[in-house]
Amino acid sequence: MPHIVGISGSLRRGSFNTSLLRAAIELAPAGTTIEFASIQEIPLYNADVEAAGIPAPVQALKDKVAAAHGLLISTPEYNNSIPGVAKNAIDWLSRPPADVPRIFRNKPIAIMGATPGQGGTILSQAAWLPILATLGTKPWFGGRLRVSGAGKVFDAGGKLVDDGIREQLKKFVDGFAAYCT
Image (cartoon, rainbow, N blue to C red; front, side, top):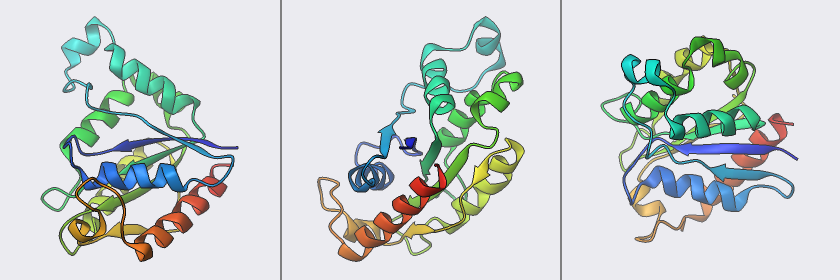
């Protein structure tokens, strides 16, 4: 029974990626839990802050990810790449470097994303790959989930209303859950 931690790479209240992650939580197969972990309180990385001690929100997220069977990142695409807040969170999780094996080594990771544009976050998802390789993760390539035209896929309250995307998301989550076992 895998336990997966999910993070959204967007801080926006009406984030399509947070909505996508919440839909994934609802569609998790029986026996699998996906825990939403916010990066809202993660400060900007600063080596002086690190020297004074790892901030409590960072340590809490590190402990959650370390204990999980997998990490699911729902990533927006900003300027054809990854969002700064998500990269900042991952940078903090890799500090100090001695913690990288405990947090990331051979950790199954899946990337998905939603955007109002047509690219479906393909460039953002590709930009994550060298970072995940550097950290020694075990990315899941068994499925891709790139949602284009997200404004039509979710209603005003963030509920997934597109049956085709729901089916794709269900297959994606099922596959990743199986990979995490």
